[in-house]
Length: 317
Image (tube, rainbow, N blue to C red; front, side, top):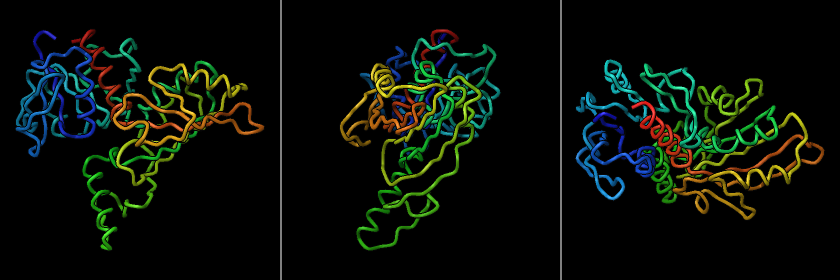
């Protein structure tokens, strides 16, 4: 990188922790990485590989020595400051309609211009589907995709997880649960959420076919970690249940499990996903449904952030 640094902002957040855990796989040296965070984490040390790095205040850091900035939470101030610098911003949180970049592995070819100042990544839930849906489409030609995403508190940040914990304690002690992050009580409850911006368009790009009919629904559930996705697919031609299971079983970082599964038992802090309940409704030979569980911060966001970073370090910076 010609001596230029890589910065990771919002250190201490769920997403940044997951990225930091996997980032050493790129070979990025500790003295080439800058950890940045808000006041509550600035001055603390976080582990990176076999060493520790001091977190600096992201409000005071100049970014002038950085060639690449990873921003796992939206921050308009940081985005504005980087706009005048010769720096590439990589984030799933930026408000941009530019095409999202997916990198299922380090050998993925990504379309990035040498003059590009920012790269938008897909969100955590869609990133979880990156290693599954394209392979199914290449094999069987997806024509329709219906998704129900059961989103845990971690996808809404540490404050949401704290709210769930606090409300649980209050209710178990007979006291009122007052919402702050969520619009209503989340403990022992389920709350529908609005559709995610860019999700359907990004899903079409992920699958690689613009004519697919896509529908998604998001539900916030009272779970601390993980995401569960009910996937219903319709293909252009008939497909056998056995063929679909065999293909899923061969996919990288995908565990096909026949036993009962849950986010706690099968995907907590995991860079792989779990699929079970692969079924085909009677009389619908072109349809397949399955249940997918993953750690959205690790299997979703961190895998994509780190693979994109690795490609940029080797090819652009």
